[in-house]
Image 1 (cartoon, one colour):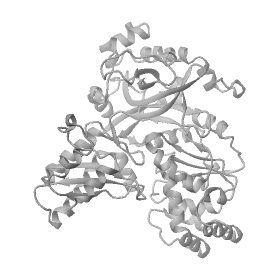
Image 2 (cartoon, one colour):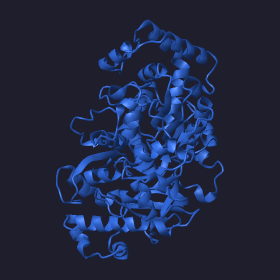
Image 3 (cartoon, rainbow, N blue to C red):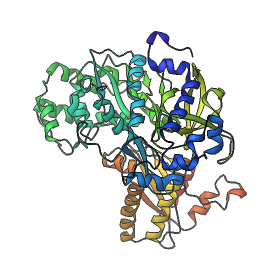
Image 4 (spheres, rainbow, N blue to C red):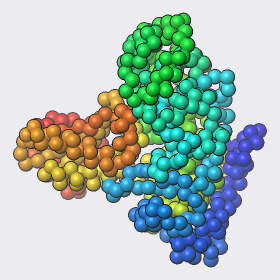
Length: 535
């Protein structure tokens, strides 16, 4: 893909010389961190080039540097990085323990507002229209940052702090964009959004949020319009008083409300553009794990272009899309020093490749050396090279190694669910248990099928249900957050007859697979077989 030189954006110029920028990143990181404890141990000051770096510095995962990260978290400086740490990003761990990923001021500075600049250009936004953000970031951007946070919150706070985020472009302004006490989103967002006819984007971190939003509208539009006309908020739970006052003070155009009612009465196929004729894009992250939600959303949006606005992990802001309706991302050259491990390589073997050495059509795991203290770090994100933008690879997300189940971005990996099963079995005396997702219900939920020697009594069922939910929430902060926001329904514990797991394991399996425990149910045949033997 040719570089868009007409845009005259530094991002495009960096992509034109991405190989050189990548080397510059490494030289900068080595020089700035040579005197850290980690840098001294590995001789950063003696490393002269990329080849020497790959020879002397090992590939690592979180457990290799957990102790150093914990020390940094406790306030020690100069352990992994010389850059001041602004946040620690919460995420689930690969062994059932939390991970806290450091995020430095230097990394935030390099991310800058590239995403917003390029996304605006790609979507061709009209500044006279409004943008509708479906979630509210539960933080005060002007207040002191929380020590632990989610990446999305850290990024939005950084944009606001540097003057790159104009919340007045969004329906509801700052009070609806940032609001620490807001835990109920859809009711107030719809109230304000339905009164604004010139909405050009509907945005959220994940497309799954859009599906929940439109299904909420489908179920609650009559009660919402009744409240709006009566000037009352019938269910104020989770809506701060200041937001309630804002909603009640909004001018209520009877003609607009009548138009909204008429469109809802026609049905909800294609409702998005019938409510907002100037709608240009539905914005949210989508990879292969989100395809089901993406497909279901089409019923409500009927051809409204999608904008899959970034490729990001807790460790690094990696890429942005350059075309609508394509989940293909140009690597952001200044975000990190990037290496790629061919997907067919073993975990500890195989030589890494640099971005300009990749081949179209092949799959690679991204290895990052970032500006927050992680060196040659396994992200476990596997991408496919689709094209090049100048010298920068354009990639699509394929899968996450060890990812087991995911509904709305909580991303349970295999080992975390194994650990959850161990804790659950220990507390309830289970023989076996397995996990699945119910994506047919809205919101979705996690299922656990448990097997024990005897038929459980009502008290065991009650305690088991409470224990399952507690364990999942303790092991995965994203799951806990999504449950708190009601974006996921409560998990469901189902007891099955003794011997069920062995029988289900044999469905479509070869003899070589029989000794592997059945812990993750990945298809409807297995789930249906489990349900058929519930007790």
